[in-house]
Amino acid sequence: DGGITQSPKYLFRKEGQNVTLSCEQNLNHDAMYWYRQDPGQGLRLIYYSQIVNDFQKGDIAEGYSVSREKKESFPLTVTSAQKNPTAFYLCASSPDRDSTDTQYFGPGTRLTVL
Amino acid sequence: GNSVTQMEGPVTLSEEAFLTINCTYTATGYPSLFWYVQYPGEGLQLLLKATKADDKGSNKGFEATYRKETTSFHLEKGSVQVSDSAVYFCALMYNNNDMRFGAGTRLTVKP
Image 1 (tube, helix red, strand yellow):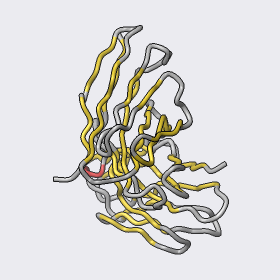
Image 2: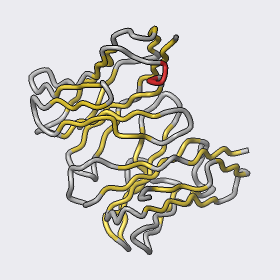
Image 3: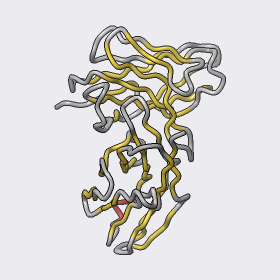
Image 4: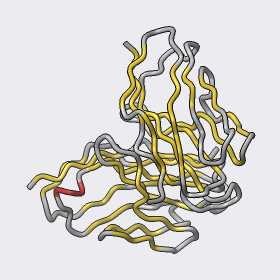
């Protein structure tokens, strides 16, 4: 089945550690996105990538890094520089970088800093 | 800038009640408008969308009409079920690099 997978579903991190969240899609989509969701708030864009080997900062990129070495993969690293990383992280993809079609979301990863 | 404002929750209804969740937007030009639904512990699922003025999106008994004159995209359902309990997000998009979400409205439907 085509879709977006994120792993792990739950992730715990000690302060000062970097952690990497996985996002994979087999939809052959060009564009991929990372959002952060906090309780009672909408989604905020962290990073997006329109094409392999290229990515752009979103509204809240500080303390995060990404890579896009393969079309189907867009991992997000939450670095120790991110002061308040506890949140629900959602990955999404869309068919075409110029499209106005919808974005398709993965199931999310809940990150908790201990 | 582009933004979405939706009705604050939580909203609690009895089964078979009528649902309205208000959504208004601020944007230049004519964005596409979306409603997404999020069930507990899951990602967002597209519920419906409309890409131009006067379009009506519909799915699973939910409807929303793109009203340019009132810059609104209110979500409605005539008879809610317990299984509709979720968080609903209104969103607008000009292109895939600029998608804006509302804060979400939590709906609880009681038997």
